[in-house]
Amino acid sequence: LETCVQEKWKVLAPEYQAKIKGHTQRLLNGLLANPKSYADNKQLIIKLNSIIVAVAKHDWPSKWPTFIQDLVKASMASDTICSNTLDIIKGISEEVFDYSKNNLTSSKVVDLKTQLHTELRAIYTLCMGKLGGCFEADGSGVQVQARPFVARILDLFKRIIHWMPVQVVFDTRLLMALMRCFQDRKLSG
Image (cartoon, rainbow, N blue to C red):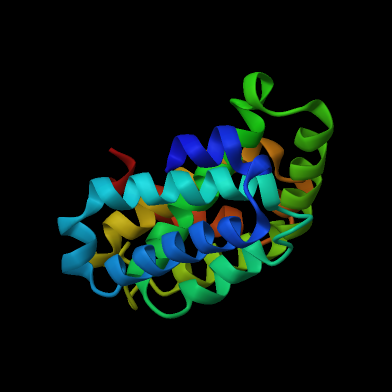
């Protein structure tokens, strides 16, 4: 399916494209319904995420303008879905900024980069909102159960910080949150 999306997406009829996209999303949502299913099916979820990224590379922003908003909205339902959203955003960022030379036209790369910059506020708000709830009330560090989730957010920031506008990095709560994370020895090690 991933190869089909990558290589033959543009020749598929729109109704088949919609069916593939819808089926992939439904299957992914079912697997993300609870943390156990998420943990038990991680390899399948990784593959489904790569299919979603491949579809987005073709359809976003022109045919799927709500791609990022859909991800952010779904992320509000649970930390499991949010973790997966972070993986998808990381995947699209890597495809656009790191691997695009071989498989995207230069105009498509420009479109995707422009759209990512436009959507940055939603991505940033999602991450900061989730990050804010992960710290101990006494300020002693990150809650133990939240450490894997915080590590995932930090990994996403590591991937996207080089294309984030400087004012977002320095004029927001991001630096303070990052400093709190790095003070936690279990995360910074």
